[in-house]
Length: 163
Image (cartoon, rainbow, N blue to C red; front, top):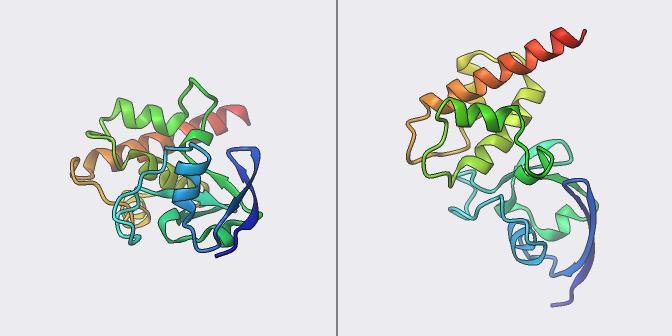
C-alpha cells in the first residue's frame, strides 16, 4: 500500500511524516513520533486509554486512521502542561488519589480536560456521564470524580480571582 504524507500539529509542534492511510493514529503517535502518553488498551474504543484531543474534541486514537488526522491539531497528556510541570488536573489526580496503577490516567486526564472546557463547573453527575467512555480497573472512580471536581473548583477560583 502506498504511503501518504501527513502533517500534524502535536502538542503545539508541527510534525510531518509518511504513513499508510489505514495506520491508526495511536500507532503513529507512539511508534513514529515517540509520544507515549496515550496508551494502547483495548484497541476497540471501549477503554479510553488512548484518549486525546483532536481539533478540540475528545477522540479515542485507536479508532482514528492516520489519514483522518492529516492536518489536525492534536493534544495528548504531554501537551497539557509545560515539560517538568503538572497542570491543575494532574495535581488534583495526585492530591485526591485519582490514580492507582496509572494505565488509564493519561486518557482520563485528557478527557477530563476537554470535559472541563465544555462544562467549566460540572456536577458530580455530569462528570460521571462525561467520563463514562474511559474505564479504570483499579480505582472504583470515586477519587477520579473527586479529582475532576476539585480541579474544576480550583480552575474556577483562579478565573474569578483574575477577573
